[in-house]
Structure formats: C-alpha cells, structure tokens
Amino acid sequence: MVRKFFPLDKNYLLEEAQLELEEDLLTFLIDLVKEEYEQRYNPLGICDEFIQKIRDFSVSDLKPLYGFYETLAGVYRYKFSDNQLEFSWDGIDHSEKYKKEWSAFFADQTRAFCKKELFVKAVLDLTVFNNYSQLAENRMNNFMLQTFEVKLHKGFIRVA
Image 1 (tube, one colour):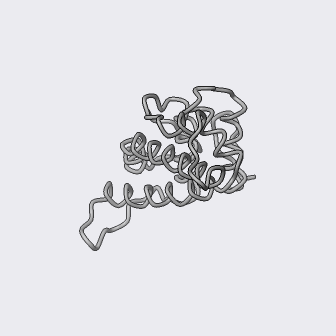
Image 2 (cartoon, one colour; image 1 turned 90 degrees about the vertical axis):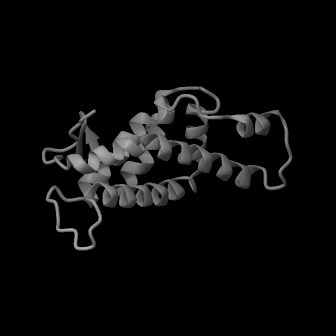
C-alpha cells in the first residue's frame, strides 16, 4: 500500500523494503514488549495466570499494530531518508541497504519506546489482551511523535 505521509514521500524502494519487513519487525516488537514487561514487573519469574497469558501469546493478528508501523515508517522516510538514490560503491543493492538500515532503526527506536511503561502496556493491550482501543494506539503514536518532534495532520507529517 502506497501512502504518502508528506508531499515529497517518493522513496518507493525504501517504502517497499519497509512493507516487506512489516510482519517480522512487528513480531520482534511484540517479543521485545513481552520481555520488557517480564523484566520490569516479574523479575523473579513467578508465574501466575496473567504472566502465563503473556508468555503463551503467539502472534496471530498484527493488524492492531499496522497503524503504528506505517506511521513510524513514514516518520523515518521524512526525517532520515532521501528521495534521491545514491551511488552504492560497495555493490550492495539499494533494497538490501534500506532493509538493513530500517531494521536497525526500528529495533533501536522500539527498544527506547519499551522503556516507557505506557508504551509497553499499550502494545500488550492491542496484542496479548486483544483489547483494542483508540487510546492505546494514540499513546503509542504519541511517544513516537514526541520523540521525532513531528505532528500528524490529516494523514500528513508536519514538523512540530
């Protein structure tokens, strides 16, 4: 799905690489959130019904996280990429380069977001507990938009 987040959002190779990695990276996010929750709230590893539900959760539906992923991908294209292809002197395909850079950025940012209690709880609400709420999704987007100092305005990214 091509979605323009800002007027010059034309790096289609990067967007394609981001879309190819969507499921893998969102699965990584869920695993990271589960791990962070256990470390923060269950450091002794005591298993009760609540913790067991988190541990037993396996990804079946990533749709509740698609909006977050698409927004973070759009912010990345806006703040950290260029619409012009550059020469690749090391022979690496642009698509592979974009996948590697995007994966590293996504991992770094989600690790930082997971340090925030409300972000972890929002992801758990949307996935493990299947308790979709616009509030949980808005919390996740709020962390991202504060971090990168941008605002979403009717589907477009604006500098805050």
